[in-house]
Image (cartoon, rainbow, N blue to C red; front, side):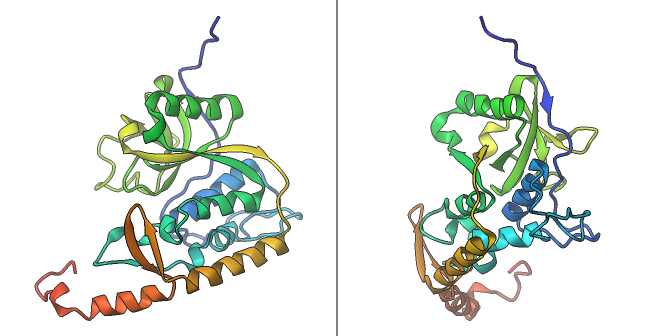
Length: 268
């Protein structure tokens, strides 16, 4: 006997993420920190909030969750410069030799387990089933990389047609350079078919456990920031990059090469 799976599930009230469009909330243009902020809001964690974006509870201990996430992940301290002008210098997985460090530190700070699923290693059927189980059985959204645009973090909030279509929020869903073939729900979430080929991995949110004290988290984040600033080189996926304060020197050296910045190339 196999229970019938609903062909469609869409979680309600998952906060939207997007590049700054004005308003009281501070600009949240760094994708992973913004996605984590939205996830924490959806999970109803009373210790976190945004004093400008919504009324905070009397129990709120962190009044800007976005800034908190920038700090604990290391994004606030992160500098990276690959040889030449590489658009993925902004990728936070390059801040150390451990590409999973930023996301792991984020979930540890809020006291939740998480599992990273390498969809290319596990295959489409396995990945689809894990997404369906999280949404249908646990009522938890999923953090995914890619789907629309570059492999930055987005939120999967639902599925349709048994998983053939995924729904959610992406920073790039309204970008005409990235959203070819994307449709939209009446509530604004994207609808993406043939999503597997554009997915670069995802985080399945696990059970809530005991989170560390805020003082311990802040101390750990500052230590991490100093470590990131002092680090000089990382090698990720076989490519070496200058990081930390050494990235400034690498950037300055590059920008002084006139041959790399021809006067008739407006983009450069």
